Image (cartoon, rainbow, N blue to C red):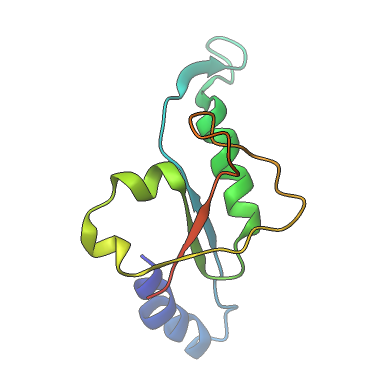
Length: 113
């Protein structure tokens, strides 16, 4: 997706004098709850809630333009190929999320390809 946007879509947008797209992606793995939000039969939609969603949002906020950041839970579950192209992110002092299993700061990684 990253390569498609940066190498294919953005050059076309630029050639057509449209603004290029930027993105920030934060991924985490774990449990989430699916809930129906809104007024029934009027304006309802499905939403996901839970700690995993909350942390993925916080991870995304750390990313810069066109970055993909992964939480520690996701990194533990990815194929070894992906582990070769990630780099540990130096966490800001304001980062307060703790891995409940290890009681240490929840680590975040950046996809570097």
